Amino acid sequence: MQSHGRFPKIGVLLSGLVLLGGCHDAPVPGSAMGAPPLLEPARVARGAEVFRQSCATCHGDRAQGAINWTKAGPDGKYPPPPLDGSAHAWHHPFAQLKQTIQDGTLKLGGSMPPWKGKLSEADTEAVILWFQSTWPEPIYAAWIDIDQRSRAGGK
View (cartoon, rainbow, N blue to C red):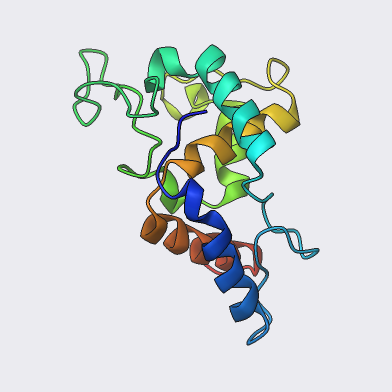
């Protein structure tokens, strides 16, 4: 399996988060407080396969997004963005990422079809875990903060 982003260092990051978790009441990934699943190697590998089969046609084989993804096409819609941490996906909490995949963006004026009924919940989560595994450590750490605040009811 190809190594991506900060995935080989995830143990160090999660160890630090667990230690920090003892300092306050914020949930850490994989805690019983409803945090997103850990970047477990088997789940990440499954996510890579599902992404390759279902998402790479539009989002690129490395989640790099479409060429010129920042420019609207003739129909006014933007091409699929990167999911590799270089665009906006990391600004969204886990629940919103999951909902976007399940519901698509057609009702919002986008081009992404809904994947509910096509991808299982486990496969949807695995896809998210895979593209998160490509994120640089500072991006992932910032995302954890965003996700935790969202779970706590804040923005």
